[in-house]
Amino acid sequence: MLFGQSVFQSVLERLKEEDDAAEEAEAPIAHRVAGLGTGFAFDVMEGVSVASQRIGEAYFDNLDLDAAAGSAEKPAPLPEPEPAMPDHLTRTAPQEVAAELAISAADTPLTLNEKRRAFARANHPDGIALPFRDNATKRMMLANLLIDEALRRLGR
Image (cartoon, rainbow, N blue to C red; front, side, top):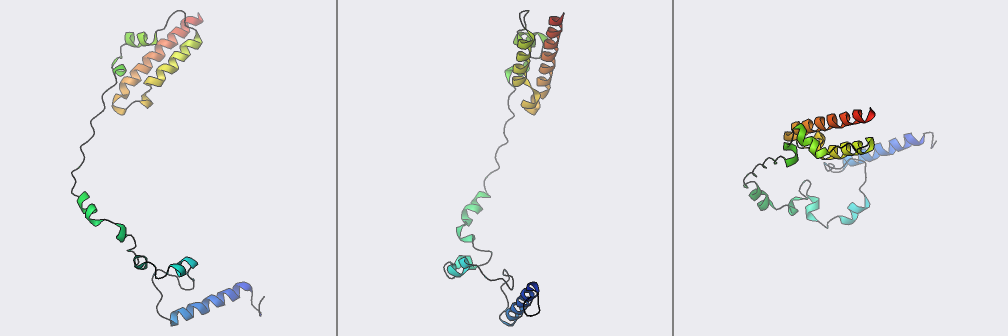
């Protein structure tokens, strides 16, 4: 307690006195809050840059308005052509997918699972462009069906 007041109350009194003094002086600048002092950098840089003293216009000196006006006249870019479907996605017949998988009687469950993962890396619909996902889905369904059938035959 300082002179019968708490520290908080004394700080509030001092801020109120500063606000009253600021109101009696010239009107405060719009971007400054009354009662807050400026930092050291503002005191040192005062008078150095005229552009920095114009509120809201500091960056206009670095802006090339002629180039900005010229950019508005540029023609719109041409739309990107649709990507072509990869060759492997055109092969959706069961015989074609079976030939790619090359399932043989010598395959083990381990090799069949490796073939499934390798086929999925190249053909999974999540990794294919949207227009070609239907073909990728068909290929994955066929590959999974063929590999599951081969695993069932191995289990007999």
